[in-house]
Each structure stands twice: as structure tokens, then as C-alpha cells.
Length: 226
Image (cartoon, rainbow, N blue to C red; front, top):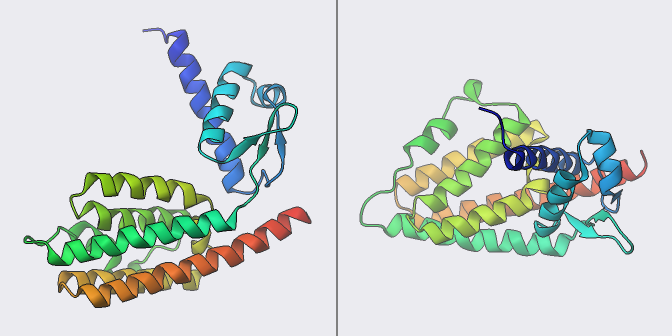
């Protein structure tokens, strides 16, 4: 069955969106860089319609901003905004820890334990895969509460901070620390030790936040001098 024009445009728009977003995440597009529909359409060999749709979507998500005359600029890094998002994430996850420990029935954490409570030789080393599992771990804690609205808000925050949060796994020692800390949190949750689990979780997130800020500043400096 032939693809309808509407589906074709939607597919192309999604592909353009994924490409630009990946370029922003990988710092191939730096904060302040200018984008235009015409140049992108020529580079990606598509019409301007899917490009325009992708750019508007990225603007709504906070990655781009309208330029003074026309086109878009990659939005400058706003560390205050990231700090606020991290703070909100901490609030949600600490609430999740409390709810998990106080719930009448034990939350199902078996899937998370299968990933994080493994011998050192079985730990992943690929930064992208570890980053994906890390997101799933923290989202899994919130999902385990059974509160769909908490989970929805947490997913939204996760998406907004992904651009810098994934940088925490570019160093081997941080990957090992993540395994150790996640395992400790899960052990404490399984014993319903809410206060201890909350302390480890807060420390874990704060360490990650500090690390990604340092790496982001370094990458921005390097990209600016490249």
C-alpha cells in the first residue's frame, strides 16, 4: 500500500527532528548557531515543510529559539534552568522512595535489580547504553509508586535534561559509581529503609549534576575553540 502524503511528511519531519536534535546533543550544533529552513532543506535533501515542522517542535521543547529576523538559533545553555529541573527531579524521586518504602505491598524492583545488581565483569561500559539504563532506573523508581502523573512529569524532566545528563557516563569511574550507587539504593529500598535510601539517592543525583556541569562547560569551551 502506497504511503499517503501526510504520512510521508510526518516521517520526513520526524527524521529531520531526530537529526537536528542529535546534532545539538552531540555539540555538532553549538549554542548560538543559526539554522534556516532553506539551508537545512538543501543539506538534508527534503522540502521545507518537514524542516519547518521539526524546527517548530524543537522550539517548543526549548532547544531552539526564533532568530531576530528569520530562522532559528540553538538556545544558549541556561544552567539555572537545568539546576531547577534537577531540583524538581530530586523532589519527585525522594517522594517516590518514601512511597515505595511505605506502600502496603512491596514494589516490583526485580527488573531494575537484574540490570544493576550484577558482578563487576558483567557491567556495561558503553556510555550510551549506560545512560539509557540510568534513565530507566530513575524513571522506574517513580513508576513503581503507581502514580501515573508523577511518572509523566518525571519523564518530561528527563527529556529536558537529557542533553547534559548523558555526559555523566563519558568517564569509566562515573559508570562504576553509578552501578555501585544504584545497587545500594535498590538494596535499601528492598529493606524499606527510606531515610538511608533517600540520602544515597540525593548524594547520587547531586554528584551527577556537578559532573555534567563540569563536562558541559569543558565541551562548550572545546567546541568554541574548535
